[in-house]
Length: 569
Image (cartoon, rainbow, N blue to C red; front, side, top):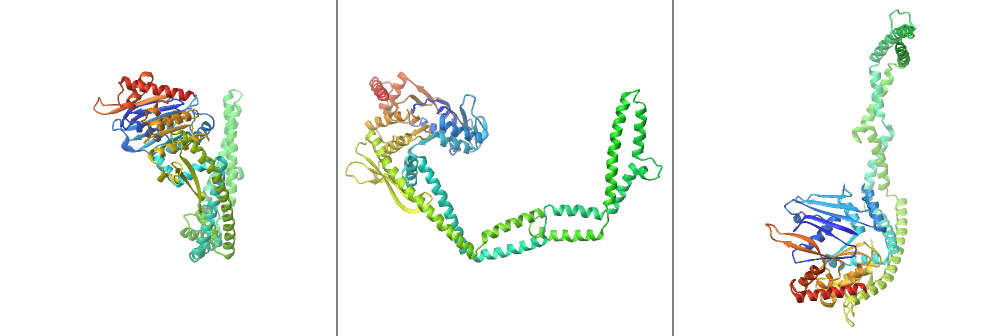
């Protein structure tokens, strides 16, 4: 659940903290006090679009922070997601989220104190919270959303079937589009393929090897400067080892180091430090001996070969011919050839390949059609149960004679199957079954949506549910029933409700009031928890606009008592 929500610098809210409980949290307040900013803050916290126009000029940024304490499936999913992003829960198991938006529109997100992409907040929000408001009612009118609602209700096995169908459909369409494109653009494909083959033939004749241009350049430099290299190596060899092989009496490095070592060894018994230095001179003599041997081998292998140099020039010229056309270096030419071979397979329009693709298209079409049929059958089975359960909930929401039907209508096969799903409302016996957008008033639509949410809640879903004035257009007994249903939801979920109805607010486990302060130069709002007498006064204000009326307070206390009895039953 969301334990705490802090909002700073957002709309009329300067700085306020909402302590939340795990039951039903109700948020009330005068029109314009800032109740909507609470829902806006929740949207920002869970990855919603940032609107710089809602940020207060002072301090110039809005900050929303929230602390989550999760359990079971939601905890595992959220912890895995934030671990992938490089964050982790606090020591007490809670997760701290933060979103900052500046007046310039810049947005930053933090999870567990670490900077994150805003998308991580969105991923967390999908697992944690579902927000329902007036815009959600409008979304429920769209056929695609109604189909998605039925699919969610049908359960995880149905959703696996839907995912399997989508994969098969995607493969089918990809093969069909590929086949159609090869047939439609055969001439252009053949022309491109001919050009690629010419290039590949040229590269194959030269047969460049990885890194060959650098190796040839180094070898050519050695041959071009062979005499200079020979002179330098011979001088170095003579300086360190000339006296070893010839009769030259000029002392070299090897003989001088040998003399120094023997001199020091003679005195090592007097001073051990000279013995240590003699050992180091012996190591130096060994190293110089190795260098001498390598120089000798180098001189033996060094050869000014004009024929080899000419061959190198010709090979490098052939490689430069390739790099002028296809890439900056030989490795790039090799990569171009690999890409060209892959592209040639894509351009193939041979009869054999077209026949093979056509067989694959037919196989995938049959597979997608079969899966779509299974999907239709599963939706039809779920539709009856879904309609029945929503109808039962409507009866408890002061719509005893209303009935919901879920029609699964065939259509051309598409990414979501071969069905359209339409929710239809029969407002009373004998009335025609009309689509929701035609058959439901604003108040009825609010109750239908709440009924659907109650049905969804029984099948799981996010642990926190937010309802933003979904009771608009409702009053009287229907309002009491909405409060009762929300309280029932709060037995298994954390529920946050923004409402203007005292009948709904009376069922709260925690009542929060958003109040404006117009005493300063700038209007601000804050949130406070109300209990006991203060809560009765707030309900009296909601009932009749008279928070100090004894009659209004008495009516409010009676409403609270009725709600308490209902919650215990």
